[in-house]
Image (cartoon, rainbow, N blue to C red; front, side, top):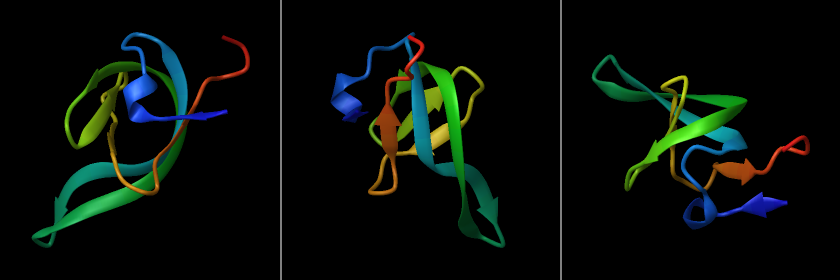
Length: 70
């Protein structure tokens, strides 16, 4: 079941797939794709930050779901 960013509860574990902000490379934003199950630490207007400090970009590639074991 896919959920939206507004439905996320801080401190809970979610399965997240999407683009990660890796800073800049050659003066341009450098994004990579990743898929993890982690606890959400905080949400800003443009990013979801996991407990491991990965910053997922909130865009059309972001997919969030509740893991089956929770």
